[in-house]
Length: 152
Image 1 (tube, one colour):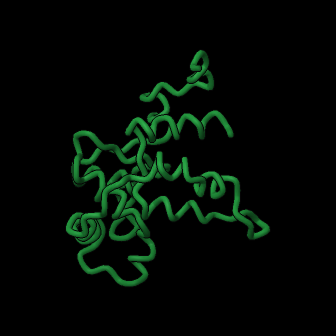
Image 2: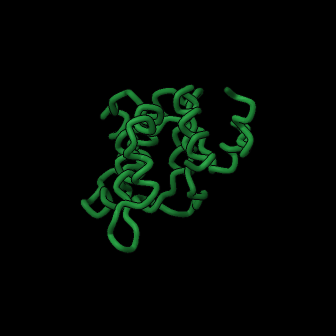
Image 3: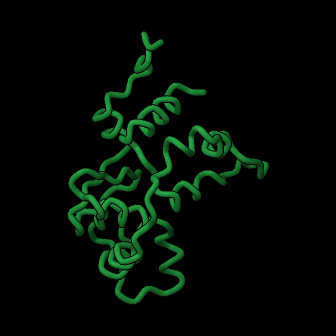
């Protein structure tokens, strides 16, 4: 297993990295060009990976609704709901404890975008939730390919 994936599991077990089940489901079913489960999906489907990374709390629908209706659009269409996907669930989980939680995303701020086109960092900022990119998370959690050298 690649060093990075083991590092994610380590930090998942220690509570530093958690993924809401709604978001986890999005990538555990990813497929390659041939329509087969890709390596990420296979890894995500392993029991030790799920146990370490899936956030054990249920979604609080009041927070999900708040994020959707106040953070994205007050009257979402079916297309809007499809476009925002599981993002409101991700942000809603962070909103439950905005001091201790941070949303990690590949999206960058696009403050001019409105409605369902808003990006995660902008919605997070609206709610006072911290967001960062993968590189900042790696830096803050001191990722190194030698992170577990010397461990028994």
